[in-house]
Length: 443
Ligand SMILES: *[C@@H]1O[C@H](CO)[C@@H](O)[C@H](O)[C@H]1NC(C)=O
Ligand SMILES: *[C@@H]1O[C@H](CO)[C@@H](O)[C@H](O)[C@H]1NC(C)=O
Ligand SMILES: *[C@@H]1O[C@H](CO)[C@@H](O)[C@H](O)[C@H]1NC(C)=O
Ligand SMILES: *[C@@H]1O[C@H](CO)[C@@H](O)[C@H](O)[C@H]1NC(C)=O
Image (cartoon, rainbow, N blue to C red; front, top):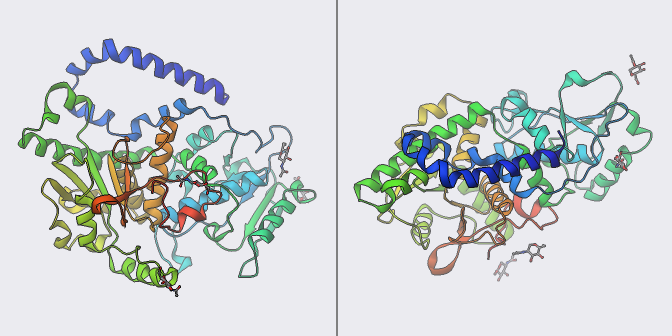
């Protein structure tokens, strides 16, 4: 099915929904259990598809030609943290797009070993993200293929990426352009050899990355794990709101609107502190490392945060034993991490990459997100939230008035609150947002 047709169908679906909601839904909702409501209204997950329908941005149509022999690109195994892997994956996709090739489904890495690359456990892309969904959402932009689609595995050309200081972005671009032309374009497979795609030069604007990220939909089993964590948070939120007799828990309103929560990606573990101090020195900036006390104080000063509210703390595992992160919060801000929520076992069943993906979802779906503008994890959460609001037609996705506000706690905003944060989608390179910055778009 082509994209415009699909979009049309979905818009029709939406239209029908809004009409139907008014008459039928109110009647039905009374009959449905609260648990069901909680589940289906629990944030982005369930309404994911609608975001695409609302927008219907035309896609530039080049990429794979439908006639003639298909051409493929193969990239090295993708490694490191979840967010570095997502950036590397997007970079591999955009490289394939540039070479007019389909990307052979790359291997990601389930575990996290920085030095011993041999120990990195490869995990197939489709064990983490939905393969068919990726291709349907990214149709006309970039496509993935399985190895079974190859006709002649020996019809292969190796492209060795240059490296080191002397290998400039221009050299890299020139090399890619050369390999998209005759005689190289004849080969069925171009295999890129050399370093991890995360370290490749960047040639693409932020909105191209955002497009690829939109096509990355978590596998259903992982997404369900995130649902469980989010439900747990909202359940506790509902209880504390009931206890104080908050109007939020009255009647229909509480059934239609799940109890809000905030998520704070609190980076204060030892490794990060060493890294951020070094970065502060190198960049001559003093606004990268925030202490626990500073984070707690600034979050407490966010204007318009309706209390009581559950604050989900996304923290490194070594901080789960540190009770001091639970102390010092302003009255009405109720901090919880995985251990206190009782979901530690749920996380521990999974390898590193999946644990990280669940935490990412919990932050993404939060009503208010607060992170560090020098963290790739925080930056990608904010990019995702910004993109979703733009798709809904929000022009300036900043501050408490928007549906999914985000803040950077390492930068001071008005009245000692964290600074409102949204991704600037007009930036010409991901560099501006992926390696951290103190120039954030809402400022
Ligand atoms: C990619 O394919 C399209 C259409 O087949 C063509 O117009 C375009 O020049 C190609 N791009 C490159 C870089 O080869
Ligand atoms: C596969 O590709 C190689 C290299 O281009 C070529 O020599 C060989 O004849 C091809 N085999 C088939 C079955 O097309
Ligand atoms: C660091 O920044 C401060 C103020 O922003 C400036 O006065 C100082 O000269 C800078 N130092 C270096 C080494 O650039
Ligand atoms: C976003 O980035 C563009 C390009 O760098 C710049 O012109 C614009 O002022 C930025 N917008 C905001 C709100 O920072």
